[in-house]
Length: 212
Ligand SMILES: O=C(O)c1ccccc1N[C@@H]1O[C@H](COP(=O)(O)O)[C@@H](O)[C@H]1O
Image (cartoon, rainbow, N blue to C red):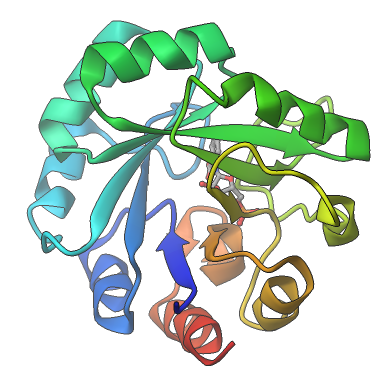
């Protein structure tokens, strides 16, 4: 099975197109106002219309309320919801209420952090292992922070999972080889500035994933 890739934090038609043409399985739209990648709903709707059915649209949220979720799902026609800083109970409620696939982000810095994944076994469809950002950071993700991939060695994953945090075209081959990830996720590693994606970096990342 080939490794699949999600390109996250897209906000412009030409870089979204680069992700689609390059073979991304998922594209991510961020709904979190402090993020430089945050999308207005009308803009999300326009971008979503560009995405073919074979590519899944993932909304990225930080402990969202129902109003935000419902508006984002309707405007961007989201297939999946990526939830950061959200408890298993809340994730389960969101999954039951929306009927959408739920990706639970688990922030990793130390081996003990992986234990949080088990709490989502009945509450989510997939775990996204992401690097824990610094305690005073403005964002819980999307900062190009990487964690020690060896922490995943021998871990009994409770659900299908994806790897993120500080990936780019130069390190994703090693990340896949080292962890066995079947899905990888990138945001800042395909940008030229925070929030500004680059089509050639997206193409290089997807090419590296396809060759891994
Ligand atoms: O990208 C953001 O702005 C963001 C905001 C809030 C939560 C998560 C966010 N991004 C996610 O973080 C990971 C890793 O990103 P990076 O490749 O290290 O920059 C990725 O899943 C993004 O979806």
